Image 1: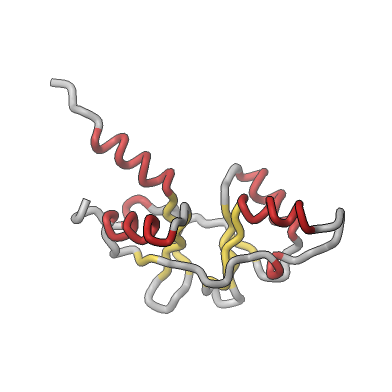
Image 2: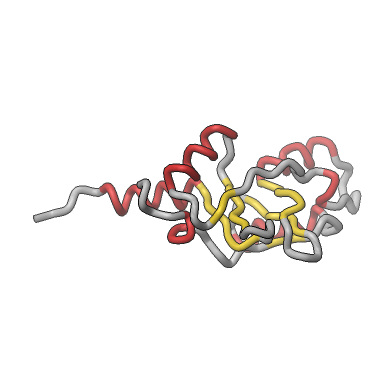
Length: 134
C-alpha cells in the first residue's frame, strides 16, 4: 500500500455546497446522490467545512421544521485533508487517527480536487487483496 497513491482511488467529481446553502437543500443533495458527506467550499474552491449524514442527526434533533438554517451553522470547520500524492497507507492512518470516514483531497493551494472515503479504501482492499485464482 505504500506505493499506491490517493489520486488513484479518490473520487474527483466531488459534490460541494457553499456555507450559505440551506440545510434542507444539502440534505436533498445527500439523498439524491446517495452520498454520506458534502464538502463546503468557499468561492475559490477551498475547503471551508464538511457536512456529513451524521451531522443531520444533530440538525434534526435541534432544528425547528423549515427553520431555513444554513450549512454554516452545523458544518465542521476543522477539516482534516489529504493530498493526491499521499500514499493509501498515509491516508488510512490519517482517517484512523482522526476517526473520520471522508477525507477531502486538496491541491497545494488548498483547493478541493477529490474525496477519499472508507468505502473507497475497503473497495480497493477487497479487489486488491482477494486471492487470485490460478
